Length: 296
Image 1 (cartoon, rainbow, N blue to C red):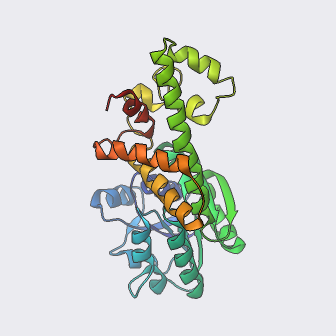
Image 2 (cartoon, rainbow, N blue to C red):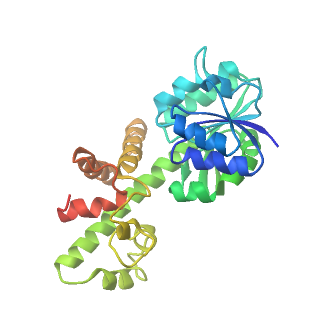
Image 3 (cartoon, rainbow, N blue to C red):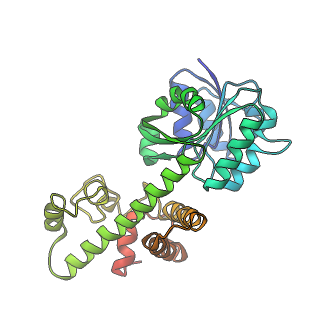
């Protein structure tokens, strides 16, 4: 079994680390939250004194951090992971960050004699706990091959998206599409209700017709048709509106850099920013239907 460092034990990173421990790997962990570290050490991990200590004498390091600025800070500089690690160490960054930062950090890792991929995830907290996440990885083929045995423990669907940063590209494109489609589905249900058609009937029809999509059939934003959807739990978050907004903003940043037209993505970001400005960023992203109905 391998020695693995793990930084970032939040809602997603914590369960991911737990699955690596259950698989028999020797984990050294670090997080700013003492409670998060305790959960990992109670499960069999060892606690590091600092982020850089995580990278010393290990085979691989997994990071799950909030934003590009955190990734740059943790990886680069005299006290960063790349300076502390032995040459040849494998780094897997599963943070969802901007494409430019991902590519810059991977380039620095390669210059330092390391292997590294960006590998953001999809699947939410439930997927992290069950080990069924989807990983979208960018980086050299050899680095991806080295990382895949670890990704297979934490996830179910593992994709190599190509060059460094392409994992982030796949993630923001997918989530931009998800945000847009959830708004479209929500608008359809709001209109149906106002015109006298109940939600279950619209679901029964559209879920087998040309309007069918994941946002409807797996994550329906109205209570009833899909029992597992957050709509049946007063929109208690599986994936928050705030996290959706983060990804939509990253998509807009990438679109501007690439000079790509994404008008619906921009409109989706604007609508989710209204949820944030109203203090509803912790509501599930499917709760956008409440904004459209005037209930937020």
